[in-house]
Length: 293
Image 1 (tube, rainbow, N blue to C red):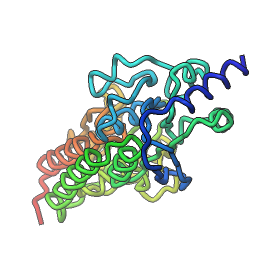
Image 2: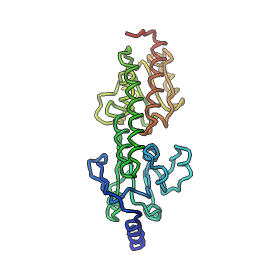
Image 3: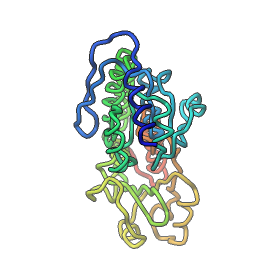
Image 4: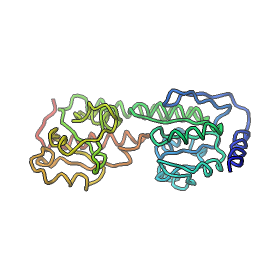
């Protein structure tokens, strides 16, 4: 099996089209990714990576993905090589990729070592900040030979992001709790892109100063923080807080469900997710009787 995998990987490395200039970019780890020619067969190992590649103009070059890769709609038809937290090396190599785009938090050390041992070029994505999305779109466009399209998409994203930041600058701050999961309770800090959305929309994340991007918290710490606004990606998660009638967000009716894919996937649609966050906080200000400065 190992020989067959290495043989397929070698074939992938030798399958080259017309000569192109070498392309090189830095990935999220700071490692330089160098290709002898733009990638023609790309495997994406996370849904957000698929979205980044399509935005970069490389959609036609994506030959396989993982479960839940459903945007844009045509991505749903791509062959699957596994899930977000694991993949089949054999299935991946059968696709003869000349580039693999993986999510840092979903790629185990062992799997990374196996890919590198096979000589398959690997770009590791980890957009933690809102601005990182544009950086990665541009980088992937260079690797795929679609730099002009990617640069234009990155510029549009940056412009929309800047527009939202200007629009909501100076809003009356409200304290916010964003809940990622219910059991255990995970939230976000200001080092995450969701935390930066809240901040850019004029919110004060009650767990913003915690060091991890997605820290675990307790019911007691949430109650002690007394958020004026509570956000989550599903109604059931928010409804569970109804028993605490004196919690400000419960008392004021300022609990809001957000579109999970737009807020949770660090791709080009994050700017739409940020719009939803800002709209929720603006609605909350109205219910709380807070007027603009």
